[in-house]
Image (cartoon, rainbow, N blue to C red; front, side, top):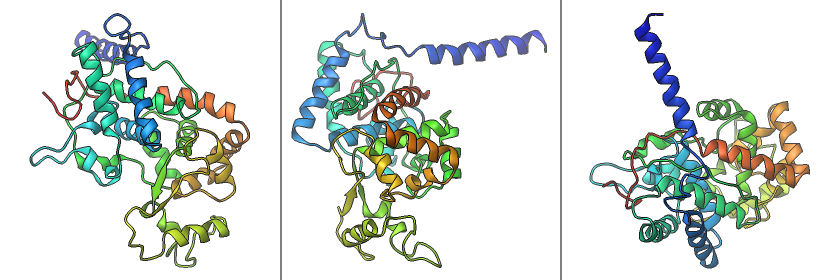
Length: 317
């Protein structure tokens, strides 16, 4: 290897290492020490008026990080001929963007031009979990905001119809393991799903079966009542587990009972390694919460392409 190539290699290694190390729980200690508190207050206020906010914020953060990394690109509005991520098919049902807007406004009053929208979203997702009875953690901060947001790129998001091979590939491309897949799927303990996300399991499942045979029969019947074959009710659907506003391990218990909604949930039982982890977290809420913190920090550290701090989270300067 010649000297020029060696220098390039050292530079690449340095850049990657620096990018990882740039995130720190203490990033705003001197420039905006009240950042965490301001975001928490915005989330608390929104939750007092709308119990769906925690699920919305957690899903929003996940969808941000899986497209272009955690760079706040999911927050950008469509403009002119450019259709932004939030208007892509998987994101049409995302909501509660106003929570991020309110937090940003309060932060700009206290620390102008300091806290990125990507960091606000990461903090808000942490608060969504903690304020729903889940664990809390010190969020590594220092993300920068991206300028590019394209609806077509939301195709990169894992679909609710994915099988275990597709899930493995999708998460693996982002440096996430099968363990992370099982743990982060536990985020489905919060929230609601529209019929379109799981009706593939209820109608014309395959050439032999009308209904997915892995579904608990009585559970399938109840879902069919809400989501008939030719459903015309726009917002029809079901909660993702039995304690929709509490962050707990009920999702895993229901999965084992054949009461999961998505094919991608059921897929976690398809191979011994992930099935074993489902059983582990179904039996211990504390084990699940500890693992969730580690996987969330890992996911929220997926490197983005951002290089600025937006003053308005919905548009670039």
